[in-house]
Image 1 (cartoon, rainbow, N blue to C red):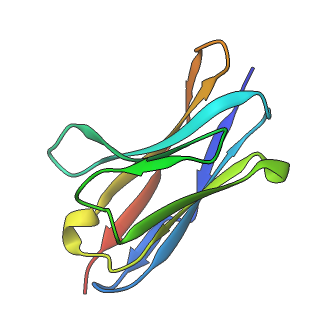
Image 2: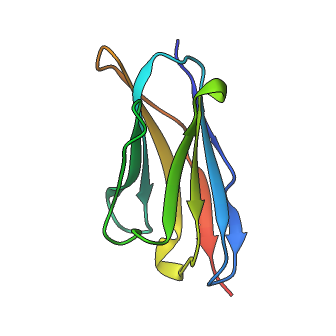
Image 3: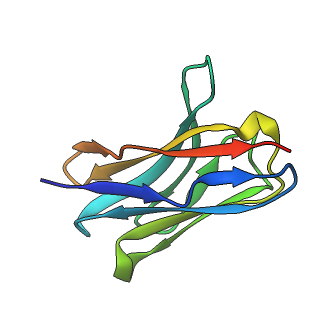
Length: 114
């Protein structure tokens, strides 16, 4: 059973930074993607990185968030800078295997507040 584990969430002041981690129990996956669910809203795409290293971002986080992958650790990191209260939410990681199977982590809470 593939396990996906997120960490790194917490409380941060506006303008601050956090780095989230997503670790997968297997190296055989094609992509890792971050999603978030803001209070009262549906889950939305944030950023993704594929096995070749290419990445893409939602317009709302472009130029503030960076996703990178450490293959040796089966881990993807989401560096979040310039956080605003609108970034508050539960951030979840989705791993997609080479066969197209999808695995979700439990999520990690990010709260941006003064």
